[in-house]
Length: 316
Image (cartoon, rainbow, N blue to C red):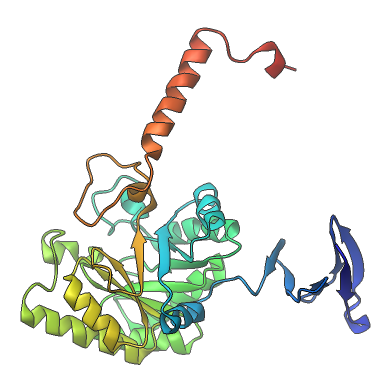
């Protein structure tokens, strides 16, 4: 591949041969021009990434404007996130659902800020393309506006995530505005908000009646005015989700909210058939990874028991 090195003497850059590319090494972002293309590549935290393809919070707004559906899926670890990112997902949500999926808790409320940072840091390390959004866990922004801003900044500083997600409407709008004003993109979350499960008393459909639907619209407009980049709409009537989508500048990402939102999100373990006994109406399984893993483990057990693994070819 024909490549040209763009460097600047004042930066003290020296060429480093890297396979098909010739790149520069130094303490500043580097630009590599290859052939007829004009992609920009940067060395950042040890990774070679291209700014043309990296999805950001701003990209979600651009996708909404262009009518392109947004795809989002959860992940909580380096290996899984790498697979999902490589598959081409637009965004990974490091959800507080890690409390259920990873830790086995009954709901999302027990997970801590430190645990969310741990999971988000691992996911960010794996992702080259997608936007990584990190949930702010229960208790990390409800106490005060100042604490919410401080914790949002901490998440971004310690994980490298591209946005944080917060549950609630008008009651958190001032906190959201403060976080956005500090330079941190925010994704809102309305409808079924799992951090409020003890108040709701269950995981049923939200905003079924006119009064609650009107409150949800008011909350969405308040979040939009506060500057959120996107709003997750969970388990609300499809017609309401479509209406909200048409009323806000922010992108909407639905889960159990019909097809009229700007995008969709699912928990990866649910979507890929790894969870047992959880089959809500909105869930479609796109693979049966659980069955594949079970069969693989069983085959491993069989081969070890019958002494066919490891073979002579697999020994040193």
